[in-house]
Amino acid sequence: MEFYELHPENPQFRYINKAVNVLREGGVIIYPTDTVYGIGCDIFNKEALQRVKDIKIDPDIKLLSFICSGFKDISKYAKISDYAYRTMKHLLPGPYTFILPAARQVPKKLWSKRKTVGIRIPDNLIALKIVDDLGNPIISTSTTNRKGDVLYDPYEIKLIFNSQVNLMLSSGNLSGKSSSVIDLSNDEPVIIREGAGDISMFV
Image (cartoon, rainbow, N blue to C red; front, side, top):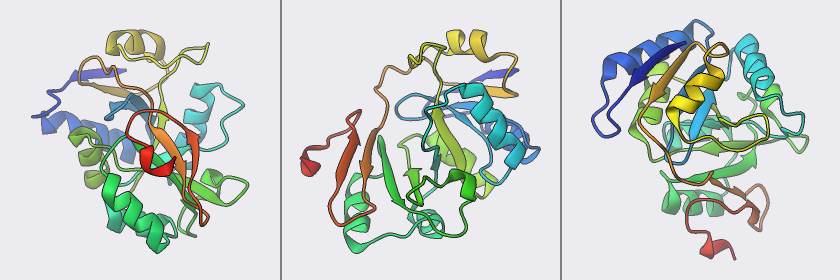
């Protein structure tokens, strides 16, 4: 695995370019978000998507979320009600995953049984730059150990995933919680997971 340390506020773009090239070639990367480190690949690469699922070794994964670069991007991959748009506009970029009805452009392997998808716009320059340069979303699933515990230390992550991914971008220890997951696919919001970020408006 290639391993590069980036400054979180002034990242070296040459390393981000390396990550984007790996994604274009069908590789799998680990990258920082505003909450935890994510394991990612191009959502349109079937082989890479299967690799991510194999790496996670989690039969209970019901929904793989993905990162969009902005609201124009979201509108390509999900159906957004007026309420959902206003809500997300207020909270994003930020530590939230929103569940929305899937648009046809999303590969069906990413649909839940309810034909929904999980979408993120993290408040993290590195993650957003990767997606923007790639030109389409990447998978966002947290780095966890075999017990399912989320990992925050980049060197522990490197040790565990060294032979499983192609490249890792590190920006130091991430001590945040996982993202809060809010289902906006129906008329009433539903809190699926309380994590990072203020969710008082949904309670």
